[in-house]
Image: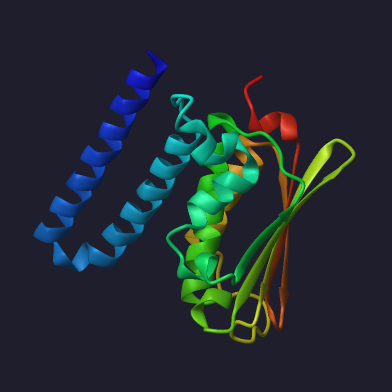
Amino acid sequence: MSRELSHRIKNIFAVIGGLISLSSRQRPETKAFSDELRDRLAALGRAHEFASPHSDGLRPALEASKLHGLLREILRPYPALSDGRIMIAGDDVAIDDRGATPLALAFHESATNAAKYGALSTPEGRIEIRSRLVGENLLIEWIERGGPRLSGPPAAIGFGTRLMEMSVVKQLDGRIERSRNPDGLSFTLTLQPSRLVRN
């Protein structure tokens, strides 16, 4: 029954994606917004696929619902991952749909921003994602290097930043600490591993 429900949810994602595409064709001036919305929906779909029930034959390919597997799945569309310019290392923890959806949104937004303005916008740019358990907390560090040089604070708080706050702080009861170094953007998420799984 869980697999059937999961299949129906995937169909809903497909229908919504189709509606966005249809609407965007009828209103070409909304194409940029529609593309971003479709990308976010695709990230949620990948998170759902990652965390949903599967047969035993498929489960190993999805890395047994661990944080690093989710990160690789969310970042898979970026060539920098297969090129070795995105590194994922450190302590790995269990994750299911409770943690997968908000983290998928947070890391999708971070990767999108890095591709537009940060480390992934240059051929030599790199991203390191390091996770480590410290006491009862999980720290996930995102470190960009080799992107365009940054100077001063951002001109405005963007939608991606607000979406990360909603996902990490409001949904997972975590914290975000950001820093802007000349070499690139960095942030650290502090979470309780127990908030990433239902049981």
